[in-house]
Length: 320
Length: 279
Image 1: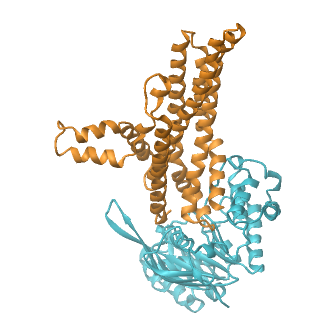
Image 2 (image 1 turned 180 degrees about the vertical axis):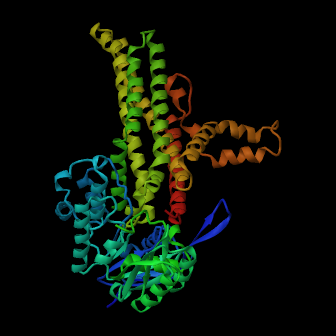
Image 3 (image 1 turned 180 degrees about the horizontal axis):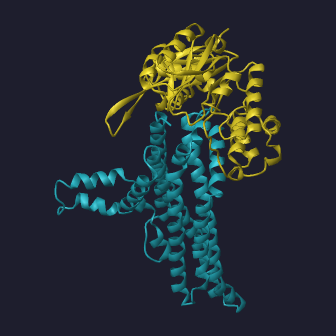
């Protein structure tokens, strides 16, 4: 399988005028995205995801390194004919109607008028906005704008789509529809580069994921490989802080809420953990085997990189 | 092609912007209000109408040119509309030139509407005596009609000069807009416009023996670098055509070419800066 996107040693820093320091947003990033897959690009806020996407689109320029999309340099005009982008909370010309804005974007691709008209109508139908096509965008709800955003990202029949939080602001039904649409894109052989905080969505649709923080990729791989293996959740009560310190030697992400312990360990570590809890005066409440989720992997990866969970800014979406 | 798509969109966007429409309505209202000016003697009335009408077209045109110039590109960047445009096969120069052309067309349309209203008011107010004279078989008086039509063409030239002046102002504002905030640009473009209108002053200050030697290069730099907006102030010969003047047609052609050259330079510089701008 060929790579749709190849990133090699991509680096970008910004100068902070106030502190007079350079802040590295993307740090020697190397990444391959195979063609025809949905690739989840994850990371907490400020991890460097949007900066990476903007470099791939030629909106900003790397300090060093290189990126290729479909074998051509990122940012090249020929590449832009074959790709598309849905930014996070997209903003379009409000004076236009839904039809006009898609027609405008179609014109930028040089699509002939008749073909464009048919394509725009088809897309409006596809994203459920056919009945609102003559309404000005200033009267659209956030969800409707998101749908228009997705429609404009499909206007050129792209081979690679960059979607930044595509389900943001959508109601549950629209959310489901967009998720299905993303899956359909893969069935049609397109590559989707999906940046999202909705880890449940990513887990459901992605073939591969990468977890990024502070400009570096911490983990990358096929989702099924990352999720492989079971964990066991141990819950206990009357656990002291001193006991927690010992528990953390076995389960580093264990935490206390008042005196209630929650810890997740590999199955072969369960007995050891239970012993430590009981020997330190704790009462075991439950021992539950569970499948690892992407959320577990995400938190674990970021923590291992030395960033406490409390510092993660995920806008409360981890549990969604 | 892409440039034209961006220009057309800019025109559509500008024509639907409330603030620009308000300026246009105020301008039309100001021009039309001169219909109510009390009838003084014919000659005095013509002078006042010309002075007031051209002044109003320019006054409201300045607002339209500056507001458009300072907002068109930065609003796309601030509101992130630019992401969905530059991620399409749109070259950066096509975007900047398209935005400028759209501004030029919008400005032209606004000046055309204001100018047409002004000329209509002028015709209504000044033509009546000529027709009255004709009705009275006063053929000498009717010659005023001929004079009227030549004055109309002169005023059209005056309106065209106002357009060139404002186009140059819009180009200044668009050039600054690719690397400056809207607020700073508003004051800077306004300052350039004011200094450019005082070009003859900066020129004479640069050559005056009374100017301190250290300030002379500064005045010289102002005079050379800042576009000479004063070139387009030809109202005086138009308002007082009996005052001896040089070949006004040639003068206007030279002023138009000067403005066009300066405008092109500013747009090219804007493109060069935008080419490496991170959005």
